[in-house]
Image (cartoon, rainbow, N blue to C red; front, side, top):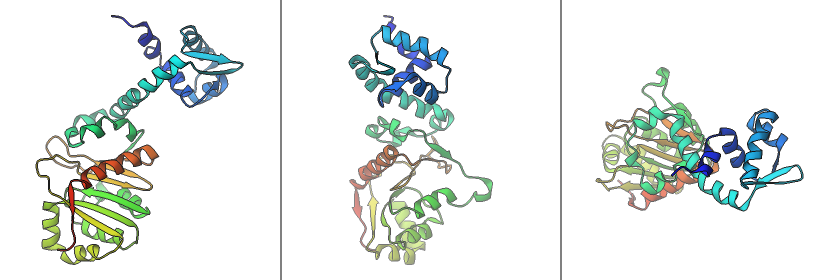
Length: 263
């Protein structure tokens, strides 16, 4: 069955964007035109169609969503934002193991928002991504899950612990074994810090991301590719919704982990 209402909303980018813009409150034509970067003459006919179908109402020179319009926009807003996340870097998402993100969090993927994709450059081919290290090091609190071992990670973890920030770290059994074997000193120094909590994730049958890092300032997400390899590409965002998503995901895995007291 053909839906004229879906056509009205989705067959014009201007109508869709205008409806989403009104989600934040009434706007005049000039305010909307400036934010949407369109000409007044191209916007007015689209507003007229939305008014005719009573999705938008006008009071003096301001437009706002009708009650019906509010209900519809509340429903389409997460859908459109979800599509925008996956459309931004289609190749990246197609190549990732998305089942490593628990479905309740995958269904909230729109909260990641307008992220930046961080990729390693040739000058740092064998290092932790400098932007990742810098952003985490300049935070006041850090919650981090590392499910792979990197030779620089023990020194990085210790540097965070020694900054007196609130630092929570989850590692899995293989990472712990490597730390116990080759980095006992650094690991012991991390564990003795009062500002640091280290947890061990022991659920071998559960797929996990490569990296989850959420601080009070930024969120990073690293995912394994379909061959279970991590190519050190990170999604990064500093919006509050993204930080909350990252912290919630960390807490999900923390709830299945046991605290490490000593080695």
